[in-house]
Image (cartoon, rainbow, N blue to C red; front, side, top):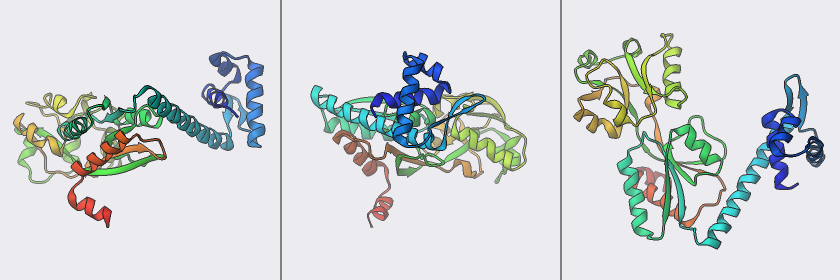
Length: 306
């Protein structure tokens, strides 16, 4: 087996056709068929089976492809490390972070790393959670700082840093601020500003109301913007939105405040994410250490050490 075989396997699985996969790879169909047959002989069982919609992976094929994909990532990691050693680029660190984080906290830690390591170079990526996870799993990022994924993602190591629960926010003149307690019925009738439809938080919010038998949320604005940027749209309107704990004070200066409601979907932890068993440079390890020292409460660090 060679690394090209992994590309062949992935292409057939993606295109569900040996012919289309061969065309995408720039191979002849007989050559690709022969390569797949060689892999099946190596595995000792069929990796694909024919269906009306094309060829599809068998259960063995799915397991084989998962392992093969890990081999590819490990190999790419090794080659990247060798290239960095050869070119003197061991000081490059690729870090992703969610736009819902307290940027002041995160950037202060990164600033400390830059002061400590004058030769360090950073590539910073701010994206929504699902895109960060894809980049991390594919080996395009070394570390990610984001809400801890639910459910857990296989092959990722998760180090919880701190709690950062979310709150339902509204203009301080909103009638709901006159109430001492609120429930889902009170919130469901209001217009909302929420994250984009394909985000985990949006999915959890919608599932919460659906489970309670309430109508779908009236989402007037959906956005991928940061909390502070999008919150300005709520000012002076009847819309509700979401704000994290760190943002409550700056939101109050905008005339917005949290409503007296507690929703399970709004409880989250901010975590450091990395691929299990992947190569981590000394720079990545140092940033991991600094993040834990600076952002994890002392009592939490004490519990973990005992």
